[in-house]
Every structure is written in C-alpha cells, then in structure tokens.
Image (cartoon, rainbow, N blue to C red; front, side, top):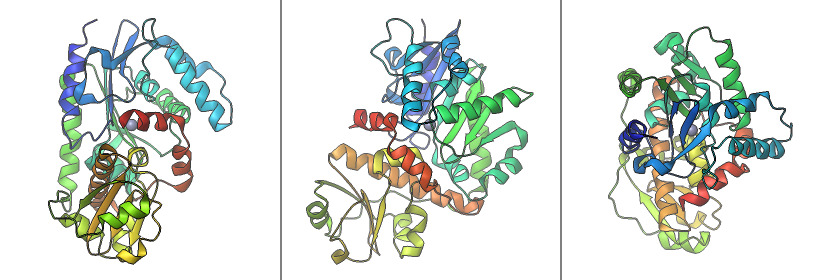
Length: 349
Ligand SMILES: [Zn+2]
C-alpha cells in the first residue's frame, strides 16, 4: 500500500509547532475499505509507513452496533479491545490512536486531527460555541466537551447521523479540530481558512519564549518535589500570568487532555520560596518570577514546559472569545484515571 500522500501531510503539519506539540494530533487515510490511522504514541513529524495501523473500516464502525457497559473502566476496556479487533492481520503489535473511530466517521478519504493553540483559544473559551457559529456558520460543527473514548465517538456518531450535509470540519470543545477532505490540497485549504479567520480575531499574540536565567529556586524545587529535572520560563507572557493569583487563574486548571498527559492535572501558584514546603504539581507559577515545569526525566520536564507554553497561548487567544474556560473537574478526573492516556504518557517518556 502506498501511503506517501498520508505520510506527506502528516510530516508537513506534524513539524509545525504552532499546530502540533509533543505526540498530539493524528491523521488517517481510507482506501478500499481499509483505514490507515496513526498509531498511539507516535509523532506525526516522524511519520513513516509503519507509523500507521491498517484497520478494517467496516469492523471498526461495527463498534456502534455493540452494547457497552455503563461502568467507565469496563466500557473503555471493551472499547479499546473492540478497536484492536478491527486491526488487519499483521498489525497485532501496533496500537491505533484512541481517536481512530472518530476518523472512521468521516466519509472523506483523508482526515487531519490537530490541537493547535490558536484553535483551542476558541474551543477553550467562555463564548466558544456562539463564536464558532458566528465565525463559521454551519460549515463547522461544534461538539461539546465530553468524556473521550467511546462516549465521544458515540456523541459524534449521533451528530453525523443527524446532519443532512457532509461534515468536513468539527471543533471539539477543550480538545481540538478535525478536518476531512478527499484531497490533501483541500485539507490544507480547510486548515488555512480556519487559521486565517482565527488570526483575524487575535487581540494579543502570546510571547512564550524565554532565555532568562532561573532565579535560584530550582534546587529547592528539586529537593521538595523529589523530581530532578526543572525547566524555567520567564517570557513576557509567563510574567503576565505570574503577577498574582488572580492573573494566574486561567492557567491553574488544564484546558485539554494533552496538558493532563504531560503536566498532570494540577498547577501550583507560589507567593514565595518559603511556600514551597510541599509540591504536589508539576507546574509552579512563582509570583513575579516566572513558571517552572518539573519532571522525572529531562524529556518529561521539557514536554511539560511545551504544554505550559501551549496553555499560555490558549489562555491569551481565548481573550478574543470571552476569556479562558478550563475543562470541568469531572472530566479532568476521568482523564486522570483513563488507561489510554497513561499509555500515551508511558510511551512518550
Ligand atoms: Zn485529539
């Protein structure tokens, strides 16, 4: 099977850090009843033929005919097992993206799913839904935040079934965006069209890069947290959030599943060094100084800082749409306990 067009756009968009951070996002292609979808824990920018898992499209969509248990753990375990059953022979050692079934819902040949900060400025905002309608009319479908995995797939399936015209673009609240198209060029046209509209709404662009030296709290943070790797950011945007507990508020709760995977669910605001007597978060906003990201490995700390920067961008872009809106607590605790995300984290280390 020739996957060159799929590999081409996976790498193209995967290498753009404004569109993809860490292992986020996924892509797929359908041909002759087979869907090739990105494997969980792989990175789009490094896509090769082996990155993709070949799945029987009909078998995968057959999941909607199954009965699923109410219990979260039992339902999600069955869901992962049923997705795995749809893999073609020879693919046993690969694990498809948990979003594979969402890709399968799109009738188009190609699907591109991303979590760009600019898009999430809208999906993680107070007025997101109304603004989506104002900006894109009925050409973009809005899916309210819900539990990922089977629940999200079922909700999207019902929305697709009710729609009387082909759905090409879906925005998922507190998550990201899906584009479906029959050519790779059309994918780019949809993506650029959305980015242009959102860029035109930006009130202020975030400035998240920082080369300022760490002001001397890192050792204490290592000692108290027991984690040896610390990254520091004192960019203009980080300093804005670090002014006071009030200004830090938009960053204190996660916006999307990626943040939970790479930073954990908690962010701590610290008024002073002496307040660091207990650290139960991987992100510390230090009053007047900047933001720390900590981890058990250099990669874990770096990934966490990448997601902190992403959160700063989302919160800044969300100002155009009534301000930032984090995920609700119930959803956060579901994702914290979700096996699928623990898997993603374990392979990203
Ligand atoms: Zn996603």
